[in-house]
Length: 431
Image 1 (tube, helix red, strand yellow):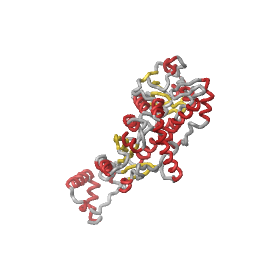
Image 2: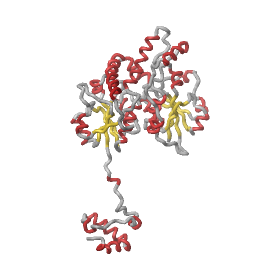
Image 3: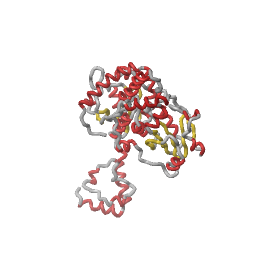
Image 4: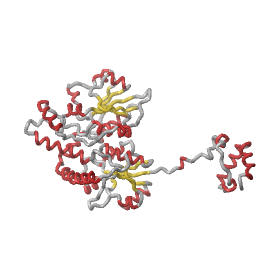
């Protein structure tokens, strides 16, 4: 039936829009062939006659959501892990993350620093993660790949451009690549768990070098001011050397990009947030529940060193800031927050409540030292928040120190692999 012979239809549409709308809906329900109306083009003016029917509108709700999967050990969580998951999420609509089991890590890499429970808390706390699978295998086996595709409805498996090899030298993602369901993201340069372990292990060498002098600096946060010059000398040797090159673009990628509303209850919490761990995630979660907007102050490297000792911080200011920004409970950070919470600062950021955890690296102000929370306390807006976990940066570092021989062996092996990667690496599109 050609267009000229359909003039009666268009006249009906013009004079009786509701009637014809009902007829077309009925036809659709009854499954009548659209060939009856063949050759009819739909003019844009029909949107005026049928504003509510939405017959010719594209059914966006019917689009299948793309689910992507990425796995990892996520031991000693850092901004490189967070950026990898951010990139993975950008390749789909929903991100499912597999956290490799302790047993698999031991078999393929050596002993993990963090427990499965701690690693799950860290991964679940990232703003880009939608679901988590615990005790995932290190290699994507055919059986596990079928589970991902059929039970978890995964469309693509994601991994970075750095090699992930099994003990026998084969590619851990070979099957996913063969199935055509593999996508690659760019590795975040400048940091790795191996690098962080190396920073901590370097303290052991330094401590042995200086322990015969007066042993003033330790990983317990204690400090003897008589040896302050020694500590500064240690830092000048580059023991805290970081290869991270911070850019404003990276900070924007991690940021929520939103400020608090005019009547929002702004909660403020500050600290070093060094070697970001499960204790940090839990205290930030609890702090966020006390208001509408969580503002986190990240102390400068110099401030942290002054209050905890020359060996701190392990992670540098921008590294620590990105780790905190990646947390789903955090709305904004102050990069380089002052030690004292002042009246001007409270007014500037419209802070309603200042909180501090009961478990911290050093609560020296509780023992008569200068109290950085004197002003919010005088204003009646300070709250001591019960810490859900007793983990600290020092306690995590001490796990590595206690088993330093095992970690040294592990690092030597990994260092060779990373050296080869950097020697052969090529630019891969991504961010």
